[in-house]
Length: 169
Ligand SMILES: Cc1cc2nc3c(=O)[nH]c(=O)nc-3n(C[C@H](O)[C@H](O)[C@H](O)COP(=O)(O)O)c2cc1C
Image (cartoon, rainbow, N blue to C red; front, top):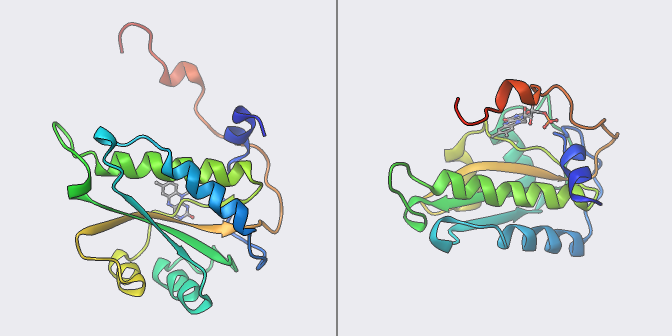
């Protein structure tokens, strides 16, 4: 899939088929995340691939948006420690997280898989379920699988003339 097609086709999918994505696809997606840039190349991101069905169920519960999500066979949970990134005027670990996770999500789209960036969840519960060490922050997670039905391309975005400025704000 062409890069710009991937950008247009990435949507937030909330209902999944129970079918497991192919292992080679998961590996390629993780490789795309691995190649993402990070502050001073510190590479602080970790990815927990959750496949065990009791853990998948526990994660759904910890997200607490059960009514909106269903049946994904896998979750990918990202974790980063503040000390594994840098800071000057701002702390860069959320930036590193966002870049790496978006690489992963776009790669999944290119593989024909569905994702949904989830930022609203009980971090404490997720860390407990997955035994993530205290110093790590979970800033996002996504289901991974096949959507039950296709969605149209991205729409409902502000036009460029509202967000782009030339030479001054
Ligand atoms: C940082 C972030 C956090 C998000 N958290 C949630 C969430 O907790 N639950 C949810 O249903 N969607 C969540 N979304 C999905 C957004 O609602 C969605 O990307 C947006 O409405 C645009 O729709 P689209 O992704 O289909 O283009 C999140 C997206 C981002 C980027």
